[in-house]
Length: 417
Image 1 (cartoon, rainbow, N blue to C red):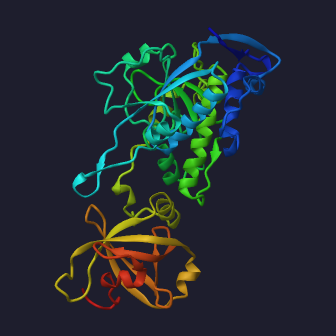
Image 2 (spheres, rainbow, N blue to C red):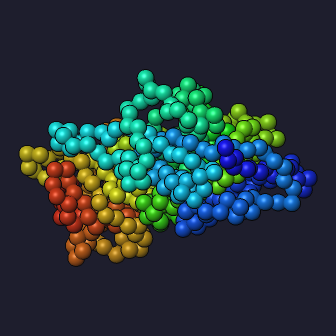
Image 3 (cartoon, rainbow, N blue to C red):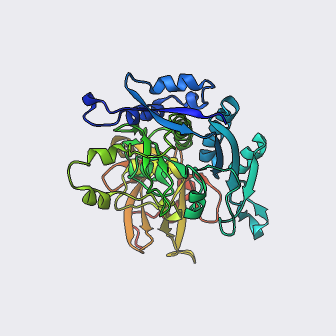
């Protein structure tokens, strides 16, 4: 049997005890997006990891991979693995794919949602296992590595122990920071200045608790808050795919596994790991509640980050006037907005009062600036910043210019309710 030779970098005295192969493994995350496609020459990839001090880590059997995925983020890694398989069967000999069936959607739940990873696997001619869970299912014969990327299901210990090399996962955060299913969303919404990619083993105990085998070097990948969110996800998916393939080429899947996480390394000598662990942020799934405007806390930048991620934000407002619906609370959606300066908002003299109600039924009164020429509305935020909303809609109506769409929630400042 052809054995794919792997190499490992020895400890360098000048490195202060930090294993050099970790630093070199991190380098894969800094490549440009177009570098996602693996190189066909295994020797060229070894040169990327070479130093003057090397020792043999061991050898890996040709990999027969069960790839578990779902969405476009996972598709980037599957595509990269397939290209590596075509170029170098000594490393990746076989790939099978596991996906969860698409959910029922649409009116009456008569349609089935697309599963991008399944569609890609079909295009690539890969064997597909479509199952709602791992229950009553065993690992196909010969599979020696499980790779899960944005999969959603927990891979149970019996499956991992059935694969010679266990499992790997690409996680788009600087683990252990932002463990959980939505790290890209949470990093962006929090306004984090940096994010990153981590290659970890799959833990048999819980999600995102494996050994970090490779990671974007500190401080991480700069987060541009003005970058379109879909572009950010594509970029991180490409970086993750590159890190996965480079990690396999470097033999990081072969035990023993060393922790390459910079966060853990940075705090290894301060004896404060327990406190730091408690302070870590979790990245739960997003929900409709994340789209609700927090008038008490959000700045204009906060609101625009949410607009970037979700395309819309919502709030609830009190209907004004003397009609039969006066006093009713209706949902309001902002569908297009931008940050406005205080000077820009001050240039509009027409003001109307609006009353917004949060999910705890707390009310916020504010004076809204109106621009009749453009149909725009200017809303003040908690820190004195402003947003200009150009398109909006009331619940149950079509979207249009903000001033026209929201006219029922405005009243003159001196008009009693």
